[in-house]
Every structure is written in C-alpha cells, then in structure tokens.
Length: 283
Image (cartoon, rainbow, N blue to C red):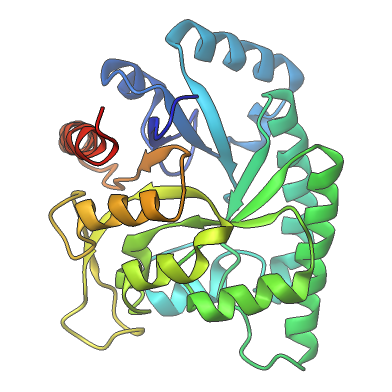
C-alpha cells in the first residue's frame, strides 16, 4: 500500500459506510469495512468478498466493529448504547468481537477498529476495571489472529484515552484518530490532540465538523464535508506528516439518506486530499 493511500469507510450489507460500487466508481483503493451482518460472516462469503475486492483492486485496511443496539442519536444515547462500556451488552459484544476478528482474519485483515464508549471516570471502580479487562481479553484474542485493536477517538479526551491504553497494557492496542469526533463531542482541539497521541496513531478518518452552538459535550456538533469545517484539513495532514504517519487516509461521510450527495462529497474529499498530498509530500 502506498504512502497515504486514499480510502473510504465502506460496508458490504449493513451499517455505516458506502457500498463497494461507490468505492469502485470513485477509483478509491482502500477501505475501512464496517462489520457485516452476522449471517454474512461465513467462510464462503469471505471468499466471495475477497474475490470481489480483488476484481475492484480494493484493499481492506481495517474491519470496524459495530453492534446491534448502538445509536448515535444524541450524545447521551451514545453513552448508553455504544461500545464495550454499557454493562448489559458487554459480554455478548466481546463474544461477537471475537467472531468478527476471526472473520477479518479470513479476509486477511490485521486491524480491528472500535469505539470503546464513554470510559468510566472513576479509575478504581469495578466498572472501569471490568472495561479494562474486557479490552485486555479482546486484544489477547486479536493477538492470536495477528491483529491489532485501533480505538477510535472522540468519546473521551486523548489524555484519558492514553491513560486507559496504559492500564490495558497490551502491545497491540493503538488509536484510529478521527479529528471531527473531537469537535462533534466537544472534547477539544483535534490538532493539539493528534500531537499528544501521535505515536499510537495507526489509522485516521478524514472527516470534518462544526462545533455545537449549544452546550459542548451535551449537544452534538454537525458533520460537514471534509475541508469545510473546523478541522483545518491541510494542517491535519501536515501534522500527520510531522508525526510520521504513512497509513491510509480514510474518508468518512455519513449521510446515507442522501447517497448521491454522499458520493459527490466523498469525491470532493478525494480531490482535496490528492491536492494536499501532492503539496505536502512533494509528489
């Protein structure tokens, strides 16, 4: 895979991300894949999907975990439903994450991405310790499949995320950096945050946003096309260059209710990133 290969968040049959036909039409060569439906996660389907990817010339960089019952309707609902923090779904989601890891291995994918959820603030609480143990068990399973876990930024400060990674103590635990999420969740400056966690960054989302005009951390900000919000696209890529990141630049634009607009805005992001890539890398 080339330095800063342009990618997009995609799906086979479910959840977030564009369809493969859109990826093909836009000439994009890498994807982060949102978790397929459980019924799709079979060896037979893995073989068929691998062939389709080969026909299109597309490589999967990461399989991203997604679970039934997760909702991003509001920040409060996100806290109650997303990731491995909600206690009622934790055990079942860990078991499903093991299955998804095994399916990703069939696809030849060595990275699993995930939102962990809103990590409990009290580090001595049993809830915090159980979340740490859950991620330890997940990392251990992934290690057996020669995979790493990339935790997505956004639902906690990067300092809290680094502290959590330190407590998990696993060598295959890294970060998928989404600059827009820090704005959407009201966490802080994405560029400053990127510099703090740079050594852990193994994947990124090229996504943009505007901060809420309401109460940060309570009210959502608004996602906008990459390069039109408060991330500062050129500074973001320059900072990635400064920290030595050479992986894929994966575009995420979640407006599935408007597929044509979604495709157009992803295409616009491809053009912008291509221009910035040539400018920054002198190619």
